Length: 70
Length: 443
Image (cartoon, rainbow over all chains, first blue to last red; front, side, top):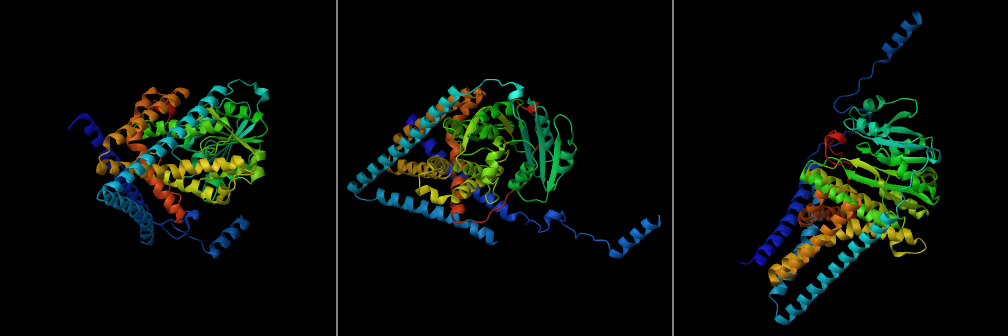
């Protein structure tokens, strides 16, 4: 096997391996996307895991009344 | 699950085309001698045509790039001649790096400018980090916040709150050189110039992957941009460094929000409206390149699909070169570089490698490959010299040709096919680590 044959083999193998690696990486990227948790609908409100706590209206009124008294 | 199934569609199509081609070649190998002779001729003609296109592309880009470099204006302007500029910095989950971006903006050597930061509903401490920089004074820093709505919307909000007639848009993961605005604004002396594209360079050259990207930015991205700059028809004003005339932005209705490549889309709109787009290689922004292979794939996937989305909006243009010839040329060039060329590259490599194996034409493949590598080495040497960059990047052109470009072109091909089938996609955020210019050896 002369030097030309060795070079040719290296080039052919590298081309084929690069293309195969490219395909594998693309599939890995798509799998990573598929396995990623879906984005919560209320992301904009910053409530990712818990329900947003809304204080009862009665307590707000009481606070307002207290302010008026003061 | 359905997403996974859908993502297998393009893969199956590619496997079908590849399998069909390989099947045809195998059939050709076992066919009578006369048929084989004809097929070998077809292979040779294909090889010559591919090389012809390649040589034409390289020499056109290098020649036009050289002309742009030779004719560039490096004259200094007095401060009184320089118009005030609003700098817009959209940010989403960039708490780790936005401080460095604002710091570099405050160090700009420019008489009158303001900084407008727009937090796009970040889930990290971006807003808090940006508010920490808020101030009045010579260089006011103002911070706005919006519910997460995308980069284009954030840019539009920033532009709506900008006070000055020129708008400089940059990415929050980038830093700029002190003379960036001064260099870019010189092109605005021509009232027909609507935007100036700057020169984006990779800052985190800490691994082989990021050094390859540093070379790619110089040779693969800036070389075409420089060549387009010679005819003032740059087809993408890059996100990290772009100066716009506010009047031009108002003329085209600012950024659209329906693509993943808002920079390419806006540039095409400006060209369509008759504005010239200049290139300034001394307006330098340093950006963080992806440090992991999957992140790199993710970025290129988004770029390719975004560019295709911008082109799809103007698909009728492809069959009508007139009267908007500059726009037609820009769109054709954009489509060629982003879609056609990567697909041709993958297919040609695969085709010639298999044919070389089966028809015993290995020597021809070797010479073809050597020619490609020499072309890349020459292009790397010329472009690295023009940008006064690190010469140590030039030898990487061998790996660039041997592996890097072909590897990325596979993903670009898949992304193009997915976009043609209109598969859904989302804006996935890349991970960031803070990098300070002083910490690395990029300069």
